[in-house]
Amino acid sequence: MGRILAIDYGLKRTGVAVSDPLRIIAGGLETVPTAQLRAWLKSYMSTNQVDIIVVGKPSQMDGTPSQSWAAIEPFVESLKSDYPECKIALHDERFTSVLAHRAMIDGGMKKMARRDKAVVDKISATIILQSYMDSLQYKQDL
Image (cartoon, rainbow, N blue to C red; front, side, top):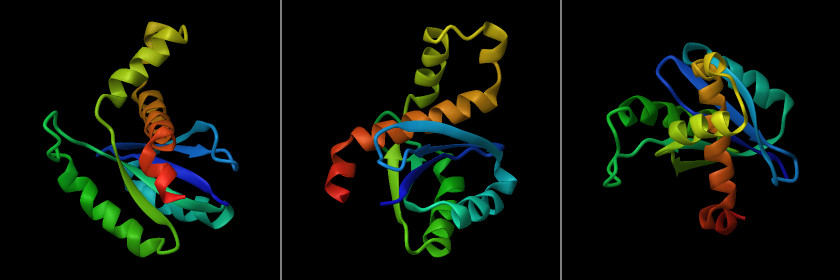
């Protein structure tokens, strides 16, 4: 059984999180400049077994795709062709940035450190991954 990789795709930076080998715990892995993401994924996937790639799907409050979906959808399609052996799943990412900021505050992170958007992106990817693993969708995918 391979790991689950989660991606919080952004126009400038992308947060990446990964599960442990037993798929119990989600952990922040990296924040990658989006322009370098495909190369980073190729390198990571060549040395790690990943079975599922979860991409945060940005939605508006009514559930319709947000404007940023137009940039993410082609990336999702490229993942499907680049990694046909992996299941590509979309998972709601609404409020992940808010939850990431709350986690940093609750964790005692200083105000200046909380301004680092790379940290927010990595924590957001971790929240997406943990939410996916806790979801009924994931349990049905097994």
